[in-house]
View 1 (tube, rainbow, N blue to C red):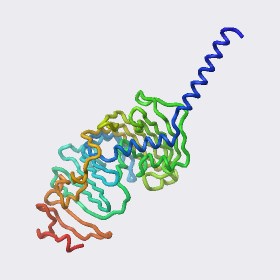
View 2 (view 1 turned 90 degrees about the horizontal axis):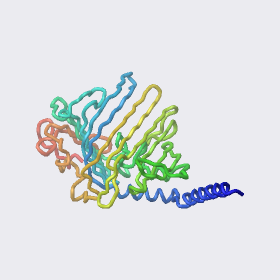
View 3 (view 1 turned 60 degrees about the vertical axis):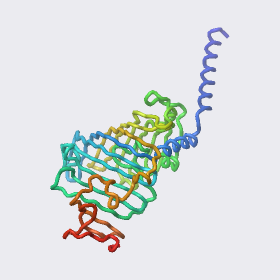
View 4 (view 1 turned 90 degrees about the vertical axis):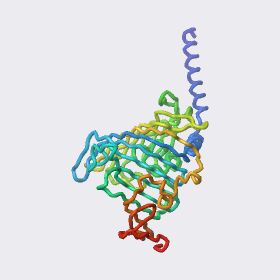
Amino acid sequence: MSTRCVSALCVIVFFLLSECAVGASAPPVTELLDKYTQALDATQSFTDTYTEVCDYSYRMPDGSTAANAKRFARGQHRADGTRLYMQDYYWGDVNPQLMDLPESDCRYHLRIEAGERLYSHSAAVNDPRVKGSAGLQHVYRERAAVTKGPHSGIYGYLGSEERLDAVLRSAREISMRPATETINGIACHVIDAGTQCGRYTVWLDPAHGYHAAKVTRQATGGDKENEWLMARGDQARGSVVITRFEQIGGVWVPMEADQQTAYTSGALFRREHGQYKRANIVLNPDHDKLGSFDNPLEHPANDPELKNGTRVHIIEAGAIKVKGFWQDGKIVDASGKAVDIQASK
């Protein structure tokens, strides 16, 4: 055998041995999922503030359409895996009836989920013509989750109210690609999975605590979109790319994300492209000491827009038990008399 042939054979053998070594060193899917769960668990209890820019388009049942609409948002979130505080201010093209809204006249929404209690408040800032409405009711949920909107992916949710690691663990089929793929300059392990919420591909980033650096999703009729079944012929897709991580107290935290979602049902559709940035993150705070999820009707500081004149109602067992207005730190009826909440229970 010639020297050239021997050299070529050595190169081939070295390449094959290298490939086998890479395959042998690649962690199994179960180990990767464990690392992903640990990454999400380490960041699920937090307080943060955020800003967001969202471009979207849609076609509605009434035939109305929008193209190149742009919505802006800012606010703060708090969560501990079972409780949730979401405070959001919106302006720009908020919805078909509110386009080009200035930030000074923004819309406000607060949602607090704690145990079996849901507090919500919607208001128009600096617009006395629109009376805000706040309500407290009992709901039955096992957990709270930041699951919807153009920012869900940065918290580990995409197309499901189950966290993504749980969606992958219950997959009908799951596999890992034999080679890593580069996302943002990092060689990531790639998982493909067929689930009840559609097909996912997840790129896990070993340089940033095994968070998902990128996720894509494709779903169709019969799959779940959040917690409802998609109708035959419907199509959904989504993707999220984490564009910046930061280490906080030794823990890698997703800080900025680029997320896209689309849903088509016949002639109806909606598409969103959100760019989301987090700041002022505190991991594992003492939420009870901070009062993160306190009822604003008892702790008004937890709702900065709970102002005099806000309509208030309390619902129990599906019926309104208390109905009145917020005035000077209490609920009053139309005559201005304080409502005895305890007596109405």
